[in-house]
Image 1 (cartoon, rainbow, N blue to C red):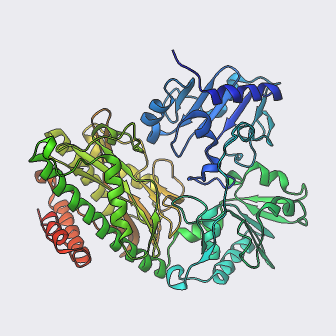
Image 2 (tube, helix red, strand yellow):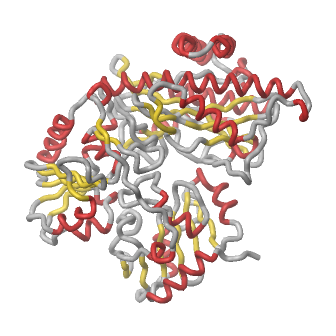
Image 3 (spheres, rainbow, N blue to C red):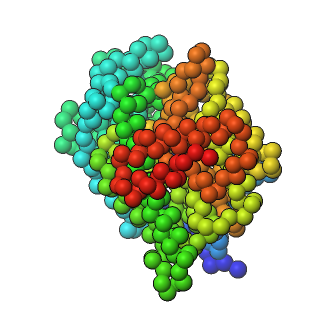
Length: 578
């Protein structure tokens, strides 16, 4: 028996008052961002599910929430007793949102949603009777967080490598190639990259709420920060679209909101394709690469200081009873300690996402977020998984390490070693130009599949430059069969193993795609040792062992000058050759 959430009850009352048969609530904001300002967390407000991906559909009779494999365990726990049914995306037999709505709605039914946060990719515009101008959650969320626009600031050319004018000229060349008179940019990271500007409107992502309207003669930037010169008011953007003269407009229709599309004049010819800016910013220039390498050295120093502290403290705790323990380390305390280590680094600005600090069985929840209710005490045994990153004045970092806090079973060591071998397989891959992320993903999984294991997330994602930790258009995942991995792209390399109720293992570095004598390959950007206490050396091939020893040699050479003597001595042992 469950007690239905009161927010769900009130939402249904609103639906009935308007005559709506179904109401859809995605996770996104007006710009289809992955991570959103608290103002836009409508799905979380109604459902209680806090993951960064998911769509809630409420009908008069039931409610269902669709999310992907990263969040199956988390969503199941958070939705328990809510009256909302979990729909596991990608699992055989689970209908898509459209299939479900086609089944439960008839020709006279009305589907409603807030068209400012939904796109045709979320729900096709030719399937249902739709009302697209309805923010029902906004009508019932009385203490909804307010957006306070941040101060927008510019980045130096030493960090960006290209001026705004030069980037704009490249974009206009792309528009000419498409015979387009206009281009609309609504993705916050694309706008921030194009203008070499950053802000603080979204937690952990240095972007600002904005739209951009580009033509051959003019580029208009619409922002909330009214102190920024030569810009237009954010809230006038949709009205200005209605006044555009006829022409050809390039826009990524799949990622453009219904509100934008509905504001375009009827005689506007739409050229729907992926934004040229997405591909431009995915391939980092020499200055961006040099800059982000500096950020990774700082982040490596912070991570290694943290790991030294963690290993030594848990070892000391294991030699004493509970009353005489050096200190009780919890998941939340460890997360705070790691943030403290990062904040010591020169040029640190923020975390790049909420740290995943997970001990034991919590590590099996792919995107676990520790709370006071779930906050485990780290014991002197088993695995601790920490996935974290930082935003520095030089760039964005993302790293995952799984740490042995004490004795491990043979199975745990087997799983850790196989994940490491999979990680090495991707990092050392050499491949033909034109190879897609899906092909590299398939190759990376082979060793784990041989022992009957796999992981329910992609192997790698693009990483922005002082922007979002997750960046497209490319990814190393089964879904991306269209984008080739190209030199200059930065991706993550993060295979894993998740044993429900026991532990999780994930090992992640950022890697840079480079040319290798007519082929493409990778070099690591992240420098932090893997845990030798968890490795079965006999399972490594000579090539894998050579790579690991060389990598650890580089870790010591690059990071040891940046840490104190105690940490340096710990690192010397942690990076010693196998």
